[in-house]
Image 1 (cartoon, one colour):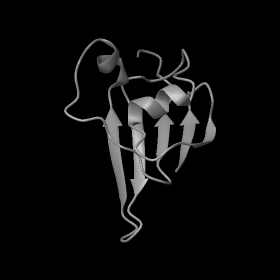
Image 2 (tube, rainbow, N blue to C red):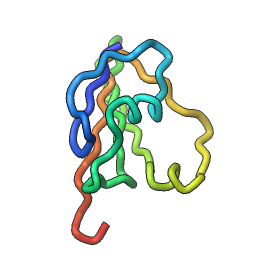
Image 3 (cartoon, rainbow, N blue to C red):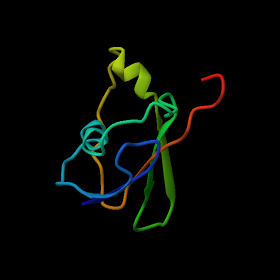
Length: 91
């Protein structure tokens, strides 16, 4: 599958990943976050191929690195976009 990395990641661009790759695995394959990343506001954007509807999932990566568990790690689909915005002045 093709997954797109945008923003404050160390390796932005398209990555060809195996089916079944999870969000956290993909983030690691994308080189991780830069020091300027807004790690509380990482976004996963997905377009439903049948309806064209856009889905946005916001993930608090900082909480995950501090041991918070997530109910399920999201399995990525072809065309998913992982967007890591820049942190603001007081983040």
